[in-house]
Image (cartoon, rainbow, N blue to C red):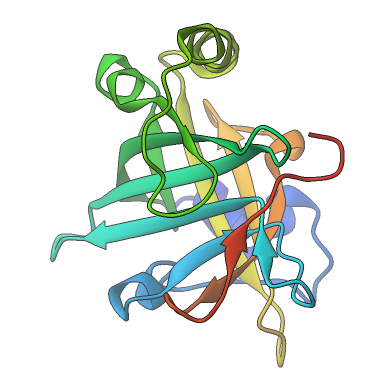
Length: 184
């Protein structure tokens, strides 16, 4: 293992509190049928982002993510991406295939498509400006006796602190739903 990979796996490359330890198999809960709930509010049982994974035997995962955009307008953004295991994380690149899957949907399940081309164009442009053709990798960390996980990202191998988020793995049908943050 290279020194860079060893630093990354130890968490020290991200200057995390030593209580956060890397998760050896970040998608094990997905293989057990769980859904990622980013920026959770456990009391309200809400998530700003919910992500479903279909994991193949070789570790490659097809991801479907729905991000709450507006509670008042009842809108969310849906996108799909293929992720590959690499150096302890899951990595993918925003490209034509990813952008073709991007759409605006209803905030509530079953997340039917909404005809709002202006919003789709605006959000696609922001995503393209930030990540087009760049490799994004997510690394998961956990603390002992805590269900909360930490998602730490890199873009083209550089730490992307603005993309850090906490998440929980939740069971489908257990009452968790999408809700935009107060700032949205």
